[in-house]
Image (cartoon, rainbow, N blue to C red; front, side, top):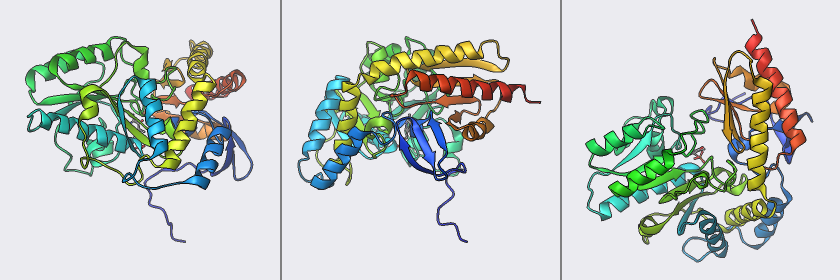
Length: 392
Ligand SMILES: *Cc1c(COP(=O)(O)O)cnc(C)c1O
């Protein structure tokens, strides 16, 4: 039999048939606790009634018109998002990579409008920004780039969480116009920078006239216990990109901007056929309204802290556990050795997790996770980790 799908993914041997809340059931009826939420996408869990009702209602009204016309649901969602972020304007696309492409184009146009001919964007080692040509170039992972050369020009890379390196780049490179950075690196291994990192980047951007672009595609929409991770600090970025959890699984991405950055694009400078269509925007509005109405940002903060503390307690003094770190419900358990095989043993134990950066178990459970489900997660996963680390 010929295989119809390109082999872009190394898929696990399971097919899910339905979901409810934090649970998924496969086509044989086996139940799994989903501690990954489609990689930080399903913040409200699976088959949430508010999202279902919004989708059904909107599907019966209007799915798509065009950005040639005004779109009421896009304007409503834009107002909600800019309010939550304390920012000014939004461009909607359909994915994270597209949101970052918009931000990169915005930074270049901003530079050209100010007479910078060959603008460069400062990006970080171990970052992840997407799989399009510009975003894979911005990504700090050779495996994402290899084979796709020639890469896009106009990026300068420095180590993450290293203000000295940013200062050196500022002194040596006169064409830098923006910094593109994740507030917490997700794919890179749940790397949490020092508390002064974002404020220091903000100060440098203000001093140099650069745009601070935060990729909140994984950290945004309540994940870290704030609506956006930058809200753990006093600073506000010039540009913020969102996607993943914004539509709870309905494809939508957003490039949010403030001040001068919000005025860069004019008619004809950027666009998208599907971006911000009524269906996706209605779903995203249901997501934001439900998170707000149910206090799920605060819930993520308290459940996340409890989960991190519970893992720290249950894995304390287990040789081979390097660190348990996280903010809100974005958690990483770093081991001293590659541990990709834990994904399969967890699957066999009815638990969905992920391993990133080879040695970091990544947990991104739905924001709605309840204490008893969190306890179950800690018990099952801690047992698997102990067994893995003591195996001969
Ligand atoms: C997932 C992710 C992206 C890419 O989003 P896509 O929707 O897959 O294009 C970009 N940046 C970060 C930080 C991400 O986690």
